[in-house]
Structures are given as C-alpha cells and as structure tokens.
Image (cartoon, rainbow, N blue to C red):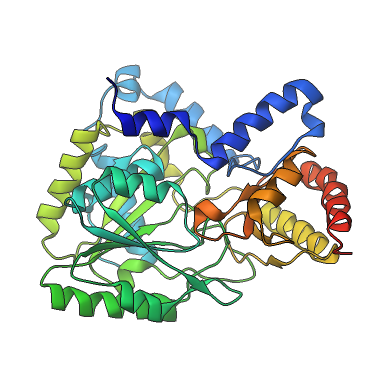
Length: 396
C-alpha cells in the first residue's frame, strides 16, 4: 500500500498548479490568446543575453566529462567559492565556500534546510501571507506550522502576535522578502525586530531559533526599495536562494543554501545540511548550470519590464474599483475579493478564462494572487475581462 500522505498530495495538487494545468488544457480548446493565465510565477521575461553566451562558451570550451559528470555532493568547489565571494563582497558578511551547498532551486534549499534543522514536533513560524508549499515542506520534515498574521495595508508581520507565538518549541522562522504572494518587502527595522525576539527566545530555550530566509525574488524590487540581508541582522541564518526568478531560469532548477559563517555550531549544522541532502537525494545539483553561475552572479533579467507590467495592472485594476496592494517587489499583485470570498471570485474569473489564485492557502482568505510575470499582451487582453467582472460586482 503506498504512503497515504503522499497519495493525498499527489491526488490534490496545489491550487496554483491546478490552475496552471487547467490553463494549459483550456488553451488547447479556445486558443492561447483567449486564456489569461496569471496563476504561476513562470517568468515570461527572457533570460539575460549573458546566459546564452555563457552556455555556448561552456559547451564549446569544456570537455563533456567535466560539463556533464558528477560534482561533489555539496556542489562544484569553484562554484561554491564564487558564490561565497559574491555574498561576502556584496553584503559584507564573512562567507566561505564551506558555508555553501548548491541545490536544485529554492524548493530543494528549503526542504533540505528544514530536514537538517527539525526534529519531530518542532515548530516553524511562518508569516501570512506565505507560499502554500511551506506547509508541505515543514510537515514532511516532521515540523508543526505556526502562522503569524499580517497587519496593515503593507502586510507587515504582526510583531505582537509573533512574540506570543515564539516558544521553547520554536525551532525555525521562515521569512520571504520580497514576498510571494503580496510583493511586500520587509524593512530593516522589522527584520531587526524579528531578530531581536528570536535572540531572546534562543537564550530562553538554550538553543538557537533558526532564521530561514527564502530569497528567490531578492533582486526583483522597484522604486528604489532595498532588501536587507538577513545574515547582517541575525547570525543563526540560512539563506535559501534560487536563480529561477532573477535570471528567468525556473526550469533549470539551480540555487543554493548559504549558512551564515557566524552561526552557532556552524560545522555540525552544515553537516546536517549535507546529511539531509543525502537522505533526500538532493546531491550534485545540475552541473551544467552550476558551472554557469560564476559568470552570472549579480545579473538579472529585465526588471523594468516587470515594473511596467506592475504599473499597468495596478493602475488599471484600481481604476476599475478593485482594492489592490501596490507591490514593492517580486512579480505578484494581491487583489481583494470584492465580496470577501476568494474562492467564489476566483471561480467567477476562471469561468471567463481569467486565472488568478485564491489566497486562502496562502493564509489570507479573501484575497487573490495575480502573477504579472506574463507578457504585456496578456495583461492588455485581460483588462477588459477584469473590467467587465468589476461592473458585475458593482465596483464601477
């Protein structure tokens, strides 16, 4: 008999994936131009030109055995050195190659980190709104999810609620900034406040409470916004990074875990990361794209194109009468369901082949996520549908 929990996960996809799969089937029936799919964070902006050039260079100049053979389990030493050097120079922290573990993207980074840190029954705090798969990853690692609500129009964490949620059972706290699904960015003041409370709880518990920073959207910010680097605020930190969004390479599944060099019991924690990678089968991340990374560190796809999409979508939806939050980063816009029922409003949109994601699973019932990493053509095609629905709901 197969594992019942795995059957349940396999039979019931995430709402994001379910909409994405539905959209692909609908496009076969009514045509691609008639389905407005804002469901998944799949970048439509091309990768930087340097990606193609480096790929060609590696293929032409590197022996196949070096390009397609195994690397060390934790990653190619030269790549880990390049990543550590970049982090040290960019953020001013003391990172070394022995603090870096190359992974198959952010999902692998998070899964490895949680399995490395958690014992059965340990609690992990997440801040609403949060990526729904956090719950899957945490529970698979034996942890218990504790949700801290957001407050205010900028979806800042409720710090009083966070203080009440921290306990001697708390093993880790996940922060995601810029945020999926809201586009909110944690200020340095807020991150320092979170770190201060975690330090206090660590002293009370006699063991560190770990900060896991999920950072695939770090470079995707607008209007001069800066994203504070978590290791500068808190030593017991793991940064889970992916190049999927910054370089528009989601299908290549390449990223890393960076363990703060100043973390308590650093050597044993890194050993646990290596052990978790081994147990989960996440060793030797894709070597071709590992070797791509040193030449691409610090580069991004065209962020100005996302900003243009954001401005077009946000200004249009607000003019139709919707309540939206202006994103400061990432490529998601949060829209409030006109009648407060995100599932019902999402279904109303789906019937018109407008695919947006109800946010109850993100810990924010009554809201929906609109992923605007699509073509401008898709946005412009969808706007009349958004406007028609707004009129049906009496918003305009």
